[in-house]
Image (cartoon, rainbow over all chains, first blue to last red; front, side, top):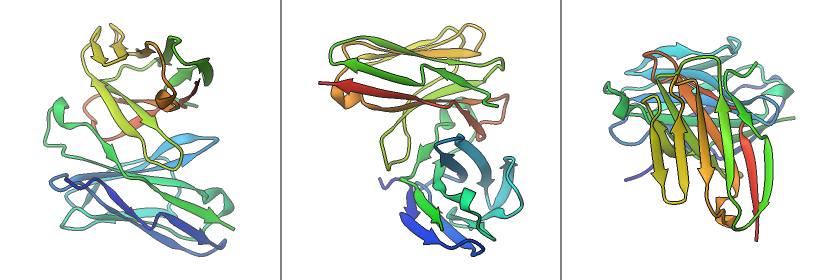
Length: 116
Length: 112
């Protein structure tokens, strides 16, 4: 069974540019969450999508957005990149059919974004 | 401000030693998970605990969820170099099982 796949693995962008990251969840998983990981702040929740709808949102500016497609694949976009956006962006998928046994989140390897 | 505080932040021990990592919060969590993350990789789920007072064992790892579901501990017996990594706890509040708050992590180094 394939795991969570994130592309690309590494990305270098210039300040002011925009970037789109992609996440393919585990087959059968309908919930996709995005996290930002930095040495200073640790892992911080960005947003979560379920059945193409944003269900939860963290405390990030509007430059961070996302979407989910009918096949549960998800993309996140960051516009007007800042140096501080350099981070490892992680995507996690889960079944979320209800019930605690279905709440485990499985993470991808992440996309390492460097803004110069 | 971190909702979940982990301690210690760093731990360097010799192979064969025992250790305990703590995850504390003032909030009640409906479930709590422990992950291990290696450099350049995503976190890998180790265990989920959901019941106050619950104890789960995974080979040399023992996980405990506090009675009040506000804290948890991870105990490793006879640590091995393969246990080296960043250990993260993550809690889900209330019925929102898809928004996890992560602790700051404990970076463990086990020296051979």
